[in-house]
Length: 172
Image 1: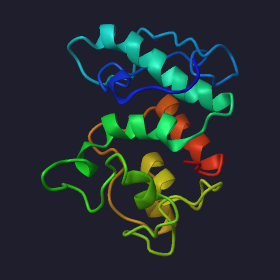
Image 2: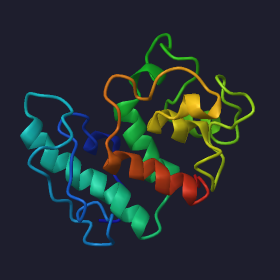
Image 3: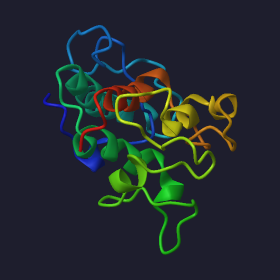
């Protein structure tokens, strides 16, 4: 896989993959579904887990190969996991993560809950409020609110997508 996926390939239900399939250890990015998945969704979780694992492995595995671009790796995942930041006609969150708006709303923009920290500071997880919201450590750095996404927090494999993108300098 090249690391490029369409938004339709990243289903929220049944997200899960083995560490080897996710490129965590530099192994194949073929995407092997785990039996348990991540607990996202219920009906059809087993069937969608295999498709999602393959798509997610393309994102994280592609990132291992150097494809860290926002549009290819992060935006498709945001499209599935961050519904409040994409609701229409009115947003249910304080800023938009819709396609065409998300990158500009994240990179180099002060966090509303912690204005002294950027939502995403390219190259620095510790200085990126988004990372703290994903990890649930926002209070430890002076922020507030709940972990994001608040409905179903990300698993380690899903967090890896954001980690690699930020560490790579948050490229478009």
